[in-house]
Length: 492
Image 1 (cartoon, helix red, strand yellow):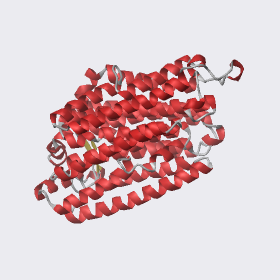
Image 2 (cartoon, one colour; image 1 turned 90 degrees about the vertical axis):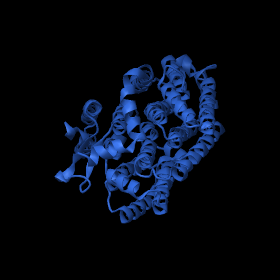
Image 3 (cartoon, one colour; image 1 turned 45 degrees about the vertical axis):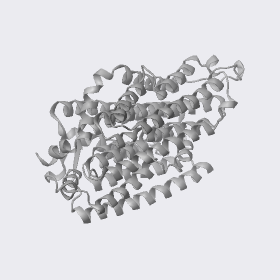
Image 4 (tube, one colour; image 1 turned 180 degrees about the vertical axis):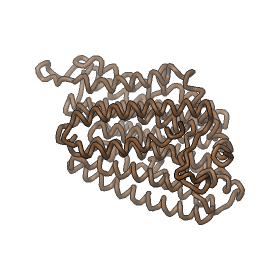
């Protein structure tokens, strides 16, 4: 059963290679993609149940025992994110089947999307800091191609910026790993954590930690997000939805994992700085969300707000806050994918990008109009949808730690999210329709179905919180107490 741990990385890569040879067989590619992702969801759920019943699992490559070999680690935090990542990717793929042209499908879009998913899953599951870099690069190399695929002028402009930023971040990542290895003498994350704790509050370790923070902030959009709105608004809709749902979450995951496991000896410096950056990100993202009328830019700045909100948990540094952060991450992956698919569909239906150039869509597309209401309520954090549970848990954690400024800014940003999306709904969804019956563009059910599925996922995450909380609590306990992770890897 422990071999399930490597499947979320291995299977997408193998299937992506297979699809390269099937580029001219569109429907066969689609069938293989759906079967693959459904199988991965099932295996991920099985792995989650295994971790819940038997504790943290690992697989050692080549039979080398920790800390000497490369390993993958399945803990509740990582596996929950893998489950959601696979489910969201399936919805984005289903939307892509209808929105991609035959020519685009032959340009290796599906293999690249699967390679990106493999990098995401590998980043969540690796237990080795250098292997984290490798999985980051697998994810980023696929995203480099996806953001430029199609060759439109705006894509090439934004892809150049995106590639340069991430190449710089990757170089800094390598330098940080080299410094860490030169200081600690190991790459196994559990072993690094053990040795850092033995060293205590060492200034050199704190400096290295700040190096890693800059790297992950660049990749996750924490304060250093200037590349994100443009980069996320130019790819085709299903690819942009995958970017919004997955890419920043890997950066967030890396920050939470490293600063709850590896760099815990000087929280006043490291965790305090993360809190300041998170608050600044929330403020800047909120200003961006209300400054634009382009619905793609509004959606992109809502991604930035989500990054800042989740990382408030690191400053609180308690179990309740980490439970809220994880629940909110799962919600945000679903909600942001849904938001980007809805915005892309609005542009498809109206051929407009500004919400004040649209009106009355609910008159012609009633179910679609109500789906916008669902995503707005979910992202704002209203019951019974998924955002409510994460925000309540986060609020409890922030109050328990006395982080009242973080609490005020975090929940103030929720008001901005509501305002930014309410403007879009009142202008574009409600009001008098600007589309005559003879000019109405048909909305295919195959485009609407993935949006409805994501809305149902958000409702499930909110309404079934009691069912999911044991898994979330397991994950929060591991994040709040690093010894659980260390003993699970080095104590076996």
